[in-house]
Image (cartoon, rainbow, N blue to C red; front, side, top):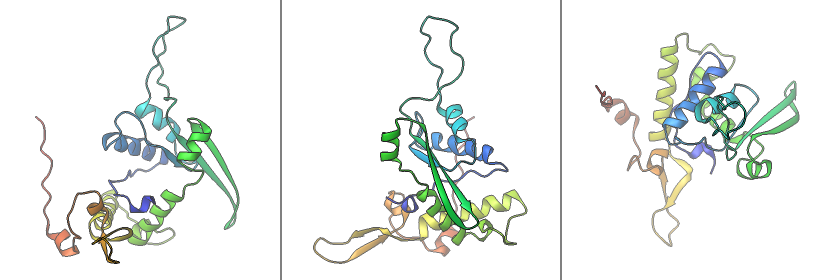
Length: 210
């Protein structure tokens, strides 16, 4: 399934890609991957290699020889590949694929040697959110405004936009399809929300544990 058809559960926002990498891994761990990272592919930017280890790495068991290990290490079952593209002007000249964690054959079979999923998501985000468009004057001058715009984009995408790839047949034997939003596909909503409904709904804050 194209990642553009999946529910968006948030994003990391920071001044540097290193900070974003660590924040994003923390979100993934909190939202469904507590024990191990999901298979992933990134470009060569950021510090995802270190962020993965800092978030999910474990100190190996002491085997009884030499000094006891103290540094966290990646697990051999992780699947992470880097895809670095070289360009000359606007033309793609080369693609370098490096399997960072995991068995190379298994990782490439599972993840693939490309970043099409995240690139498709980035394209959709830029079409919906003018603050993410490059080389324009619509950028956010304040972090709070940027975070609010990104949160609104995710709400609209998840609850109000129907996607062709999520359509399901309404009745067996008939060529009629029910269009779904990502939230409907995830079982979080039973209908497509309108913008008016989205704006008039008050979300209760999570209870604070004292």
